Length: 260
Image 1 (cartoon, rainbow, N blue to C red):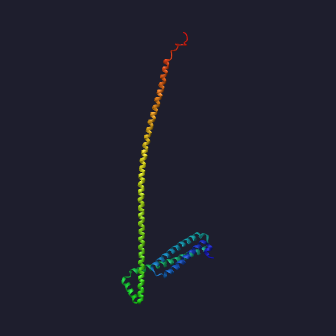
Image 2: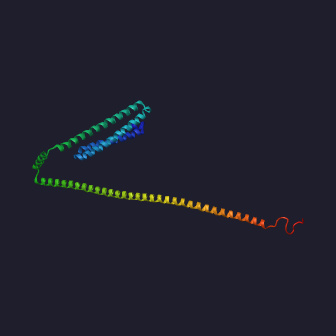
Image 3: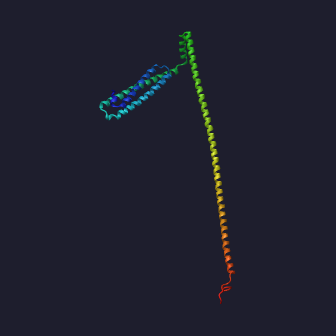
C-alpha cells in the first residue's frame, strides 16, 4: 500500500497527478530533441511550460495539505512528506533549467539564422550543388519549387482570409450605421410625438377652463332666473292679498251684520 494513501487519500491523489505531469514532461523533452523545425520546437516548449505551471500549482496544493495535517501526523510521516515535497521541487527545477537551456539554444539558432550573410548562403548552395548529380539537382529544384508554391498558397490563403475579415467588418459597420440611423429617426419621431402631445394637453386644459367658465355663467343665469321667478311669485301673492282686502266689506256692514 502506498504510504501516502495510508496518511491521506488527497495527498496520494495529488502525488499521482504530479507523477503524471513529470512523466509527460520527460516524454515531451525527449520528443523535443527529435524536432528540427524551430517553429515546432517553440510550440513544444510552450506546451511544456504550461505543464510545468500545472506541476507548480499541484506542488503548492500538496504543501498546503501537508501544512494542514502537521498536527495530526507523527514526526516520521511529517519528515517523509517534507522529503517528498523537496524531491518534487528538485525535479521540477531540473525541468525548468532544461527548458531554459532549450529556449536559449532556440534563440541563438534564430539569431544565427538572421545574422548569416547572403554570400555565405550562396557559397553553401554552391558547395551542395557541386556534390550533387544532375538528377539530384533536378529533384532539389522541384522540391524548392514545391516549397515556394506552398508558401505562395499559404500567403494567398492569408490574403483571402484578410479580405473576408475586412468584408465582414465593413458589412457589420454598415449594418450598425443603418441601425443607428433608424434609432435616431425613431428618437426624432418620439420627440415630435411628445411635443404634439404636450400641445394637445395644453389645448385640452384651455378647453376645460373655458367650459368651467361657461358652466359658471350658466349657473349664475339659472340662479338669476330662479330668483326672478321667486320674486315675481312673492310679489303676485302680495298683490292678491291686497286686492282681496280691498274687495271684502268692512266689518259690521252688509247682510248678516248684528243689529246695533
